[in-house]
Every structure is written in C-alpha cells, then in structure tokens.
Amino acid sequence: MREFIVEADGGSRGNPGPAGYGSVVLDAATGETLVETYEYLGVVTNNVAEYRGLLAGLRAAHDLDPSASVHVRMDSKLVVEQMSGRWKIKHPDMKPLALEAGRVFPPGRVTYEWIPREQNKRADRLANEAMDSGASASSVRKLSSAKAEADVRAATAVAGSGWAPADMGAPATFVLLRHGETPLTPQKRFSGSGGTDPSLSDIGREQAERAAEALAGRGTIQHILASPLTRTRQTAAAVAERLGIEVTVEDGLIETDFGAWEGLTFGEVRERYPDDLTTWLSDPEAEPTGGGESFAATATRIAATRDKLVAAYAGRTVLLVTHVTPIKTFVRLALGAPPESLFRMELSAASLSAVAYYADGNASVRLFNDTSHLRP
Image (cartoon, rainbow, N blue to C red):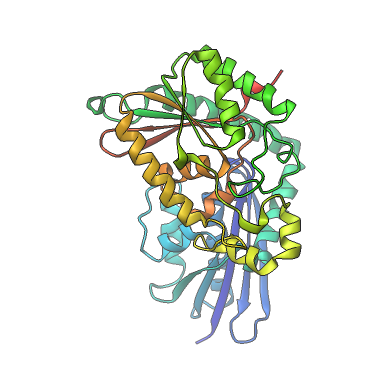
C-alpha cells in the first residue's frame, strides 16, 4: 500500500479576517513533493482555515491514490487532537469540515501528528501566499470590512447579554489592563520579571492616563490589583488616582521570567540561542535559556491566581494591571485554547481586555486588546 504524508496549515489575518490555507502531499517512502496547493478563502477564522487546509491535502492525496494510507502532520494542536478523536468538536463552523475530512479516506487509513510550526514551513508558506494573493483584491477588502463590522456588532451583543443562565448571579469580572510602554516596548525586547524592571516612558505615562480616563468613564471598577513590577504599579497608580481606589499588589500577576533572554530582541535570541528558542516555541514546558519560567509554569501560576481572585471578588468588577503573558494566559484558559494560541494573540501596550467568571465555573471573554481609548 502506498503511503503519503500530508502537511497542512491555515491562517487568518484578523481571526476572523482574510484567510488562506496551504497543503503539501509527499511520498512517504522517498520524501518527494507530489502536490502543493493553496487557496484564498475570503474572511474566515484561523481554525476554519486550518481545517480547509487539511481537507484540501486529503483530497489531493486521494486523487493521487484512493487506496493509499495517509499520515497528516500539522502544527494545529486543535485540529490534530479533534481529528484523532481525543478532543470534542464543538464549534458549528468546524463540525461539517471535520466530518467531510473524515470521509475522504476510510477510517483507520489516516493518522495524525502534531509538529512544531518551524517543521511545517512549506504549508505555512503556501498559506501566506494564499492570503497575500487575496489581500490585493479590492473586492476582498470590501468583504473584510463588512464582515469585520458584523463581527463587532455580534461581539457587542454577546458582551451585553452574555450566555450565562440568569440564575448564575453576577460574575467576578476581571478587566485586564496591560501596562503602558517602557523604553523596551517599541523595540520589542523581552521584558519579564527577571530583567531590569523598567519604568514607563513618557508615551507609557500618557497611555496610562488615557486608560484611566476611559475606565473612569465606564465607572464599573471596584478594586484595583497590580503586578509588583514598576511599570504595572505606575500604570495602576494613574488609574487609582483618577478613580479614588487604592492599589493592591498581587504577586501572581507578575510577568514571565525570560531568563537570559531578558532585554534581547527576538532576532537576537534566535542568533544566540537558536536551539533553545526553537524548543521554547514548540513546547510549553520548555524554559527560556538560563532557567526562566516556562509557559506551562506561568499557566499554573495564573490559574491559581485566577481561582483565588474569583473566590475573593465574586460579583465584583476588578481591574488587574499586568503584562502580556498573564493577560494572554487568562484569555487562553477562559477559551480552553491550546498553549500555542499564545503566539497568535496580539496584545498592545495599555490595551484593555475582560473576562467574566460565573458561579458554575464557566468563563466569558468579553473584550480583547481594546485600544480605542489611545486613539486621538
């Protein structure tokens, strides 16, 4: 029996946003590339694009030899775990795609393997080519705009009404404020808990003031907690002065320790510690060079902090002034998303996000990376 390897990927610039997939079919015995295919999909989510890439790869393999066996390699933990039957498929957009993919070959003839992103470069390149080709068309830009506006309206409706049953009572709501810029922020340098503990820059102080003004206008914050680092305490102080609320320092909100990478750019880390960086990007248990904190350890810490604060502030709205990794981790855990989703979130300085926690343990992400208060 002939055996193929399918490598597939999909991406969305905006999630949902302009999206595309890429698929490669290889001869398992020789490693020869037999098929490369990609397609621009219009505006869909990242996960839908990944499933479309899988489906295209399986169909291409089936066209070559319907009696073959196939080994699928993808960097999407979600797709691999769901298609392997270990995770349930809940999203209505993905269920029909998963069912369709499962029907291309008979059961038992397709196996799945998760691989790090850097081992899926061919499919990733094709997916990006697909997105690049679609982004140049004016009709696509109009479609993206209309879809984005619809998504905003839908998100606003969800945030206003919520999905929790009425008898769950008022949730503990965490408004997550990332600190303002420091001198390291625009240079995109690693700045965790093991570095120089920089203060806010002039721009960062202005951002903190604008965040304070926006939060004062909303009038819902009842408590303020901050990471112990200087930049978060300074940002929290600006809000506290405006709202007349004292700041409580919460050690569990501190940023990840990036070890020897502190103060370096991503490119500098790649040059100096390429193997460590590759491992770190693919394994949440991996620590940065020099014994920093892994993403898995950060998640454990944030989960414990979350549970403590939910119990302490049930029915209250609390501002948590913290950092990139803790905020992304709060959101990831609330969504039940895999660890690699941390690399797919954009979180700006002084941005606002929000997660509500109900009495039954469910969470609702209400807001993410809102920077509207920073615009002139």
